[in-house]
Length: 160
Image 1 (cartoon, rainbow, N blue to C red):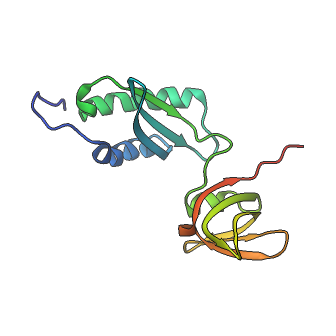
Image 2 (tube, helix red, strand yellow):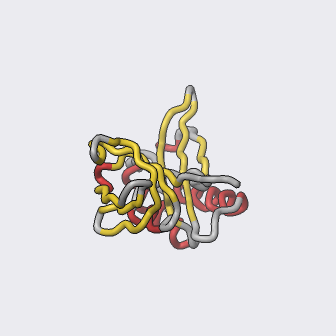
Image 3 (cartoon, rainbow, N blue to C red):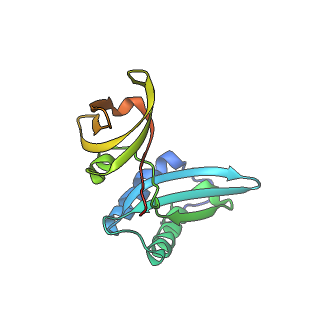
């Protein structure tokens, strides 16, 4: 189904569910999707994930699949933009319960908006993350932090 001239232009909000559905049908998860300007270029950045990791060939495959879909949906009114498909990488941001549960037993570094006992930055081992609450064990004690109070979180990576 191709759009005829005069058909409406699909916005990022309109194409995101269709892109997510396509990515899931191919065995991947949509981690993040952003459309932005970088100098004179427009970029659509799609970040994908998969339980056993994402390979370069996976990114190329998804890019080809999404390119056809985005053209069909008339994304960006067929104006030039670069489509970038990548993985979240080893230092991926943690945003959802699923992200924190995935690293259960590992250390996490979180920045909070209000903080716990005056501390806005906490490092500790992830005990659990359920019902919007992250439970971590710091050097001193176990604390619970509402995910809504966390403005950024990353796994604390340690190399030997």
